[in-house]
Length: 185
Ligand SMILES: [Zn+2]
Image (cartoon, rainbow, N blue to C red; front, side, top):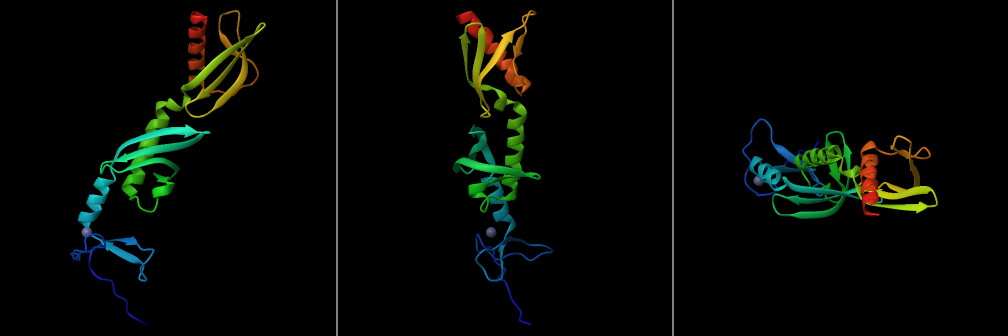
């Protein structure tokens, strides 16, 4: 058996670590011994730097993206991400972002999802063809509805033909848009 040793210095600030019951380390990709020790101050600084100042979510082709601005001023635009457990992993910065960031990103994502913004309309247009009415709509969440037939029933209620699966909030926005359309045409 061969003894291995690790220098008791922080891999970030190179300061000597105070040895205590437990010390933190980063799994190292480059070091043979496989670990990089890190001091509490550097963890604190990193956590503070990676505090999310703003996270703007949007969709492209129904895929979610996020633009992140950190407390440090660092900007990471157009990140793809996935949520697993209680973290949200932003692909391009997964290796360098601390867990505190990943947890916060999930909280931001949940807030966004709960706000229902993704069900709002990005665009809508109506077409009339003889007695038939159609709408073409796209939600901010990237869902597209193309030439969906609808009608107004005897009670004046907006009804969608076929078995179109649609979020109720989205439907309410479409009804509001139709009422606007009637006023202006
Ligand atoms: Zn340090």
